[in-house]
Length: 333
Image: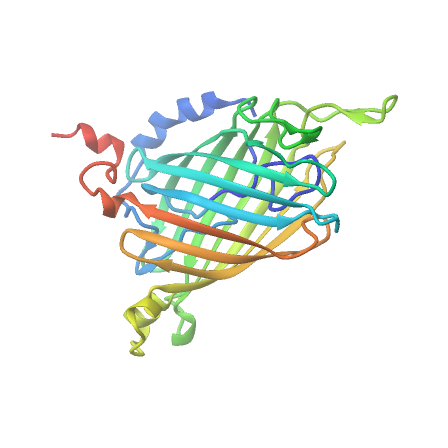
């Protein structure tokens, strides 16, 4: 899952990152496909399954969709305004370990005394490659690149800029996941840690006109990233000890997420942000539901707590012989 898109006023989450380098995605597919290795569609590394997180992207390559994700967070200024976003994401495997994703969202920006600014965010596409999974130590790593496509989003209304729609960003990213099933302490075995580190390179560099005191419609380069700490009750009951909890409880995964973003170039018009997410994930056989409270880590992120919720579908279980198979397998006899 990718967070809310960029705002010129400091906003929640970290930027939707993305250089005008779609050719990187296209030219890289044949090489990555040739290097792919067998893997599982769900995010398994050994016995541990990494859930689909909402504030950062998980390290797995899979056939799944988030339909939808809803996010609400009060504006950084304590004026009663807020930012809401309703987004979707479709993830599809090309081979077992190579996949792409398409994501977009519709945002509402409210401010007291103004009409609500609303519109579509810029469309984003991404390519991800998972080169290594260590089942014994429940570890996986993947790399990816995301392109935010310029001029595919709205600029808002009533003078409130909802998204820098005229510019895009390319974001190379590193992802990892580590389960703690190899630890000697039983109570810690259900734990898992996932993370993401990204660097956004702007299509159009941000410039400041000292004479007019204004910026152009560009973006600074930026760093962003995050971590999630998960505790799988399914892992506890299946691989540590069955305490006789109801099946519903055994399918829960309490989770804590943290994201941050900061500028990596000058001049810049973005503030450093920190955002926490605390909640729970319920994973069934074909779908998952997640809800988290959003807690701003500083005043640049938000003035009060918000919420994020997601409904997630697993196509490999819903459509195991069609949409849930890698695209390259569609052409095999």
